[in-house]
Image 1 (spheres, rainbow, N blue to C red):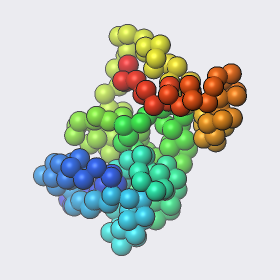
Image 2: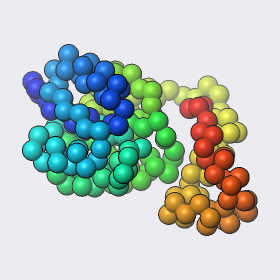
Image 3: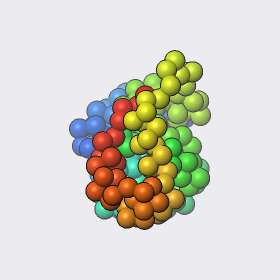
Length: 176
């Protein structure tokens, strides 16, 4: 990595951003933190980051919706999505929109740095298959994505009541 690589951290959790920025600064990055996608777009234009770490679940405009604009403002930047609300559908969409890597929270500093360097962090063969709850949640996310986020249309497509679907979507299972 170049001597003072510039990283733009886009996350609405101020404690997480502060801790991550401190760790990245110690590793030679010049960091700027933004708590919204609007602030990130304004900062990106004047800061000119070489790296962007983007959370998807943001107040107002989501990180996924802002990804193409960030990519347009910093086309050469390595853009890594880091989210606590991961799903196969959002991972595929983020990569299609120009993300370099997609990480699930919690991610270690080493995993984040590996993602910025182009390596696939923490990829190991699964010793256990994903839980049934995880598979169901990912399927619900995929059908929800196919219906452009419309809960009612998704519930109809799955043959379930809308409230049941909403409850299932709120019960996000752990990684495995």
